[in-house]
Amino acid sequence: MRSDHRTSPLTLKIAAAVGLLFLHLPILLIFVYAFTTEEKSYQWPPPGLTLQWFAVAWNRPDVWSALSLSVQVAVIATAIALVLGTLCAAAVSQTKFFGREAISLLVILPIALPGIITGIALRSAFSLFDIPFSVWTIVLGHATFCVVVVYNNAVARFRRTSGSLIEASMDLGADGFQTFRHVILPNIGTALLAGGMLAFALSFDEVIVTTFTGGQQSTLPIWMLEELIRPRQRPVTNVVAMVVVLVTFLPILAAYYLTRDGDQIAGAGK
Image 1 (tube, rainbow, N blue to C red):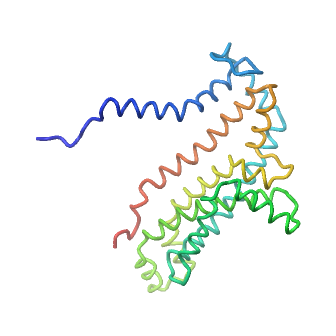
Image 2: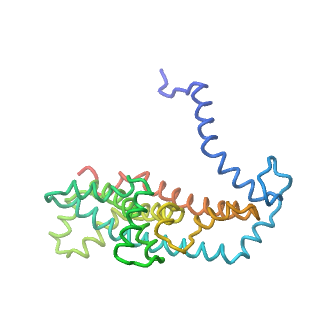
Image 3: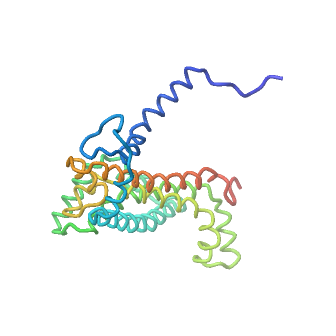
């Protein structure tokens, strides 16, 4: 009997390994340099290993201030994105009206545009309306692309959810809120959770839009960018960068596991 399982050629395996190494080696170097004893340059191999930079980073108030601002902005931007993204997805996928595809394109457009274009546009708008730069201007800037992430996840799940389930719920006497709570939300819940996690990760490490909308506010990625210019205590920056990698990697990994079986939902295919 002929087996359907075929082994990949050796050259393909080598090419895949080289590609993965090219993508992830810089990240591994960040982890290594977070433990180096050299504080002013990047020597390879590191002259020694130490844990002192973790204590230094822990005791620096500017790190905590930047981290607090990043978390605050990411949480608020994600909350806004969940509300607006879900409402847009419901409107586009569940109803038919003139200009529906145009609206869908406009919703997706901010994430397709280069970040510098979005940043310049937002800064010009804030200046035109005399809006002072603050935490809220950063939140609005981040929400523009966070909405897209939630929208893409929600609209895909809405389109795979059988309309007959909603109709059956309404026929049985449920009102709109009950139908949403007991029928729609269980079907789209994992998609919303995954979209929210991805939105949080994108907002947490955003640099370009924050540069144009933050004013004197310094989020953690902006703090890291400024610290890299200074030759003093560079390993502290690598410690913080390692934390950022972990903070953004975990939500993305969780979002992957939540959405990989997204086609197995109630009413699919009916």
